[in-house]
Amino acid sequence: MECQNCGTHFEGNYCSNCGKPAHFEKGTTAEALQDAVFSLSDLDQNLFNTIRQLAIRPHVVINNYLRGNREGLMKPFVFLTLWAGLIIFLEKYFILTGVSSSSGIDKETNFAYNLGYFAGYYTYYLWIFYAFFLAVTAHLLLGKYSLAGHLVIAAYLLGISTLTTIVLLPLMGDAAFVIHPIPYLAILIFYFRSFKGLMAPWERISLSLATTLLSMVFFWVGLTAIFAIAWYLGFRPTS
Image 1 (spheres, rainbow, N blue to C red):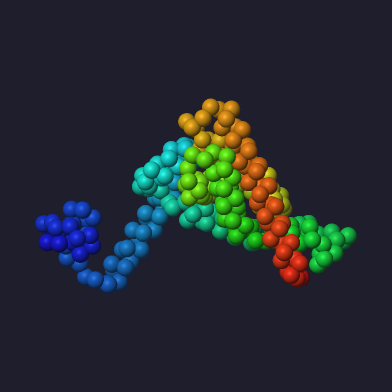
Image 2 (image 1 turned 90 degrees about the horizontal axis):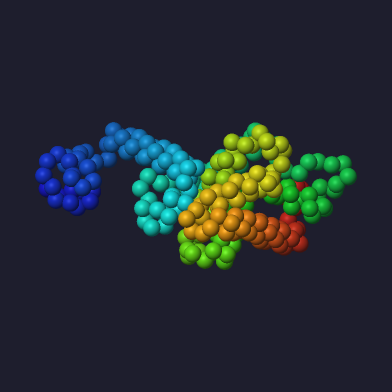
């Protein structure tokens, strides 16, 4: 008998390769519900395994993923998007963000105030955008992997750093996520740990620090330049 799922020839009630039943009804409600349950179960297992592995040994996760050993791992940008989305949800509904109001500031015409407001209320998009700057900086400084490889690393490390920051949110006060030092400190620590085995400890420290600081500079220079162009064209986020 040939499996209708993977094409393997087998005998018995289940495929020896993928486990698909030899006889099943296509498109039934029961099968759809079963697939949904299995998909959610796999997602939960991959999510918690990815968190655990990144927290304990991020260098092993990254090396395994880049070598093609991805069993039990959530995809890097799905992992990042999940936590970035949770951050924006928490900040929107539970945490006061943005720039503190002041009677001495003209909110509609003050460039710095509007830039801070923009950063505070578009955190989700900006944080994913930051992954590109982090990857480019690490690629220029380290050069061990391709840019695509560094994008994978950046997504994973931004994801676990974001989760760490979520746990520490009570310490952040009312500051916007992307302008608070805690997320960047978490990135620095996880980058240091992800370089384990690649270089001496002092090189890991200097490279992790340089990657984090330079990517922050590139990110904020790029963000300010883009916002300045939008400002010149009449964009006012607070109006």
